[in-house]
Length: 343
Figure 1 (cartoon, rainbow, N blue to C red):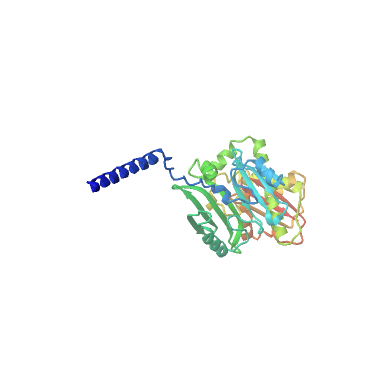
Figure 2 (cartoon, one colour):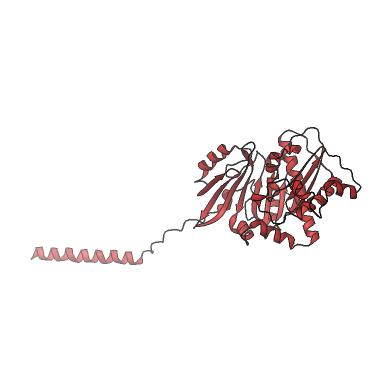
């Protein structure tokens, strides 16, 4: 009998305890769902001198000051060029008020560990080393450049590029593009150059003239950047010569409105002069009663950005970058037709 009583009491105590425990469980705070991983800031990883894609022009100026040169290109993108230090020469391009491209040219500045003047082999090693850090998941190499991409959910988000100087096999420049907000917006026709020229031709003459002259000044700055990096004196801008060159560039541009880049590596002067309705460089000079002092010249049609101009020029003995016996240069540029003379 005593055993039954003790056993019953034990059962009762066990039931009571289980009820108390159940009550505690019922009143306990619900378990939290696992925290979502923090959003990845893809732009911050590719910062250059504190500048990231998607910054506004005002934010860029707030970080590194006013640019040494500002111009609008044929895609109607605003560009800020920082050129005081040739080793850190940089061009920031904006679309719709946000930075969408950054180009660097000097050997003292890099993007994702890739810097101008690196050899192709060095650049490949750096990309392989940094692929995980920068979330680069697609890379391709061609004889003219490097294309490394950040692909998110099957769509390209950022493109890290490097243009190769084929003559000496090193990088002329390194760039980062916001593919989502820039490059895709350009390709509204199957031929991006056709699209570029359509946009250009739809602008009024005054706007086109401003674009051409702005980009010609950019080429001038690139020439001096390269000369300074080679330990040479910068050249002075010759206004009259540049005006003459601008007129001749316009003559060349009449016949090269829609030439794709792969067909455009040619000397435009040879193709233009002698065609009906064209004026020679000498004719233009004579009509303006101007006798240019020329020690060297380079005329070509190259359907890419001014940032790439001196790759093709080196293959055509473009010695404005290396001559010690010259002091002045004139640059004309109309719709990717270049006329550069120097003395």
